[in-house]
Length: 157
Image 1 (cartoon, rainbow, N blue to C red):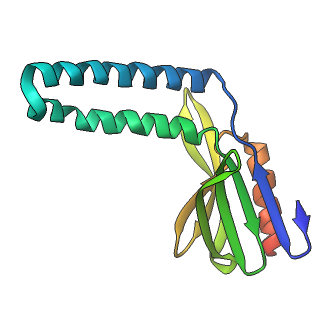
Image 2 (image 1 turned 135 degrees about the horizontal axis):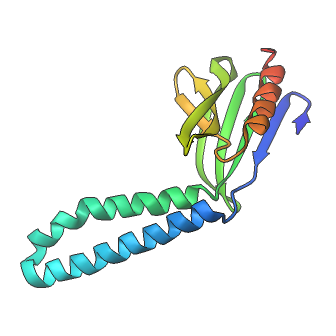
């Protein structure tokens, strides 16, 4: 939606699909196995032996965090002087990135290729802040449309 002097893009959060169900099931099995192993390690070898499970707990937490983020909505607001990118879980802002619009350069990039099928994301290059990503899971044509709208608003057609 474009209001006088601002462009606002809202990408709704993802919904359950086969990929998310698979990831959630794997995260549950992974963390369940690590829990059983850690309890066994504590009982049989003590705290030092159980401490070896710490990296595996971190990996399990990373899986859960990635799954939660796949449901986050993304809001991008661009004005002539600044931009703000927010990740939302429900009504709560869980992450916010701000910067100067003059440093912003939207581009479409391939995120990864899975089974010979490219997965796209919109990468907003910001010189000081680095790479800001939005729209994971959207199809290429939707991301191209968003990039075109942002570029048009910025006068970089």
